[in-house]
Length: 76
Image (cartoon, rainbow, N blue to C red):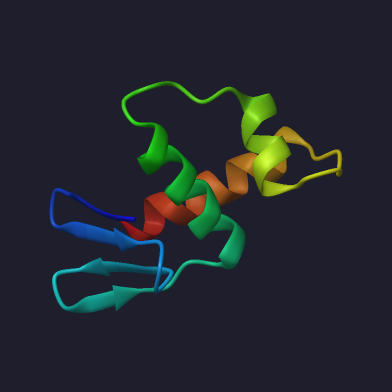
């Protein structure tokens, strides 16, 4: 899957986020979260679904999710 939003392109195959020709760095989990949100847009994704997809079989705090969101925001 490849999706464009604003000046950004996210490519699931190459696992890259780019702004024009500049590749932006995201950690693997932050990329997975961004990909999930882009795939499901414009729907809201529940925290439980995010946790199951990003951290399967692991209990995580909201702080962990918030950290990934913060990382994505900084990159964008």
